[in-house]
Image (cartoon, rainbow over all chains, first blue to last red; front, side, top):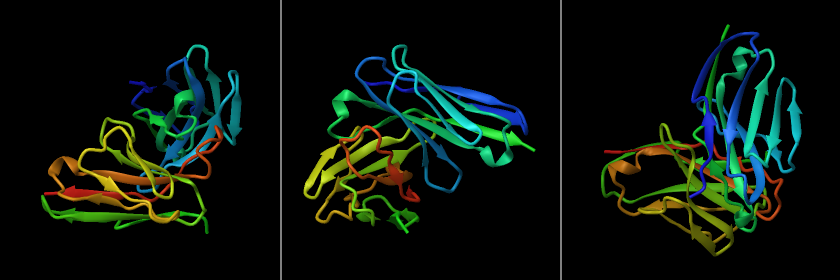
Length: 115
Length: 115
């Protein structure tokens, strides 16, 4: 069974703080790693899809790094704002699922940014 | 507007009463999938479909059926719902299951309560 773990489970920060959280995934048979942002009462939306070891992606104040050899990805938020409050999901795709498109999701990290 | 739609958004029903949750996408995507989200667990895949008339079990298929008669529609059927199927359900689609870059597009979710 492939296991994808995210930590911490939840996080409370003050507006303006920078924060980061982790996604751990199997280091073998890596194909792709996805990050999604899920706001309450909305659907998850894709932030990044990462495929290469050492990949770094950035969208505004949010960035992500990828280490496929050790099996982790970090998501960073610089200068958190209340509108960043959401659950951040990562999802792993293995080579074995390259033909099926299947993703294995972590439990998510729920971020609360206080004004 | 490109989107994935689900209906109904909210449903309260009783044990044993058959129900169908519809899912439709207007992006001509090949790959569609159903997930359930439960507290403390990540999104878990119920069933997926790689194309018309091609469906397969995900990680938690028991108690569910699906069909894919047309490319755009992928209904989820609960023949005899039970309380342990109370959950938040998401439908998702992807343009091409083979590409490592393809993110999943999620519907708005259906919150189901089985009494």
